[in-house]
Image (tube, rainbow, N blue to C red; front, side, top):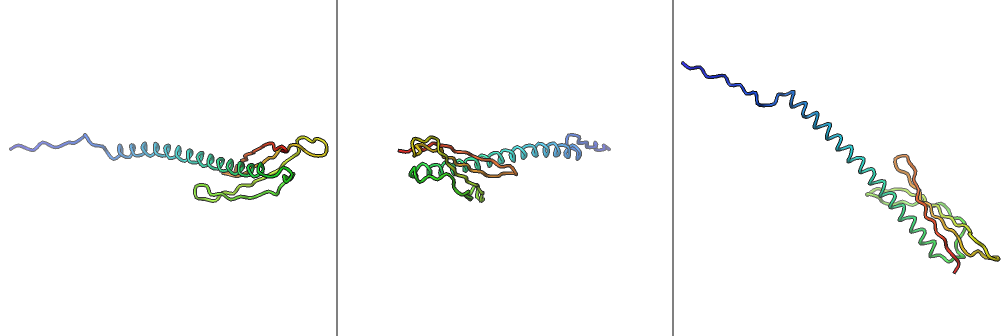
Length: 136
């Protein structure tokens, strides 16, 4: 009578090999997720900066559209809320101007400045727009 040969299958994974491979894959995925998180933060920081630039250019266009004699030396600080990625973000806008040169009793040109400030992750940033407006 022939006895069946015992079947030994050593070609599969053991439980420990499977767990080790899962740990290696998890470590790699955490690295990829951290890279994704860092890139999203940099992207948001750039969007906030671009929105501040748009805001500063808008206020500078308002300055440049004003009559020269209507430009004051200082303006009150303005708080502006803008939507960035579906959330409200607060910006602080400071406007000022100063006389650059005077001839006789009238000033002939002014330097106008718009500073837009915002905060992100406990860090305050600012964008400054400076231009010269001359009497026509």
